Amino acid sequence: MFNLPNLFTAGNLMAGIASIICALNGYLDYAVYAIFLGALFDFLDGLVARILKVSGEMGKQLDSLADMVTFGVAPGIFMMVVLIGLTQSIEFVSHEFIALAVDHWLNLFLEGKSVSWIPLIALVIPFLSIFRLAKFNLDKRQTESFIGVPTPAVTLFFTSFPLVLVLSETGDIYTDNIYSLVFNPVFLSLIIVAMSILLISEIPLFSLKFKKFGWKNNQLRYLFLLISLIFILLFTAWALALIVFLYLILSLIENYVLKTQKA
Image (tube, rainbow, N blue to C red; front, side):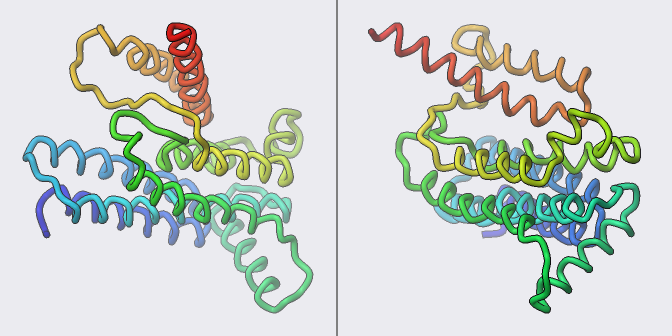
């Protein structure tokens, strides 16, 4: 039960819990860093399991339970906090301002007073994530690739938004044309719903796991990694959202090429 891969999985779970606590207390940047730590543990548990040749139903179930917290509940919570701040037009310049906005919104909501319900839209992320994870465990088609966007990919997509808010210059999100569009609460809510639906979609997506590291059969993976590195260097906080878009686009291109070859 308490083997090394399972302990890494438990570390993934604890990172997800830490992310939730940080987000609710206004530390959106720390909430994102906790997600990154959880993603690292999620990678290591599988890697170590393969190296030690440890596998079993226990590890599979623990992995899904941990992923539900880190890549389901946690992104729902930190995106809810983002929407709470945006609907109250706060400046994301300090943890205290964000925490006060969250407390104010929660108090009004729990007291049944007039308050924007838009932040609750973020909870569609964990709502559909639980179906995604259950489907993944049962779907025999997803042993070599994915059907629908994996929960870690959707979560990493959403980490760009709190990072941009925290790291941007004060007031940019309300004055810059692009920022004001992306961070409009209604527009951002539509993005949340769209990305969440992709969790349970039937879109085939290539896997990033390398069986061998040679160029043959890995061209798409190396191209993805190269462009992703360029995105990170050029776009910093926006890079993760762009990388997930790249993942979707390359997968769609691959699907089209494969269908063309079969025709």
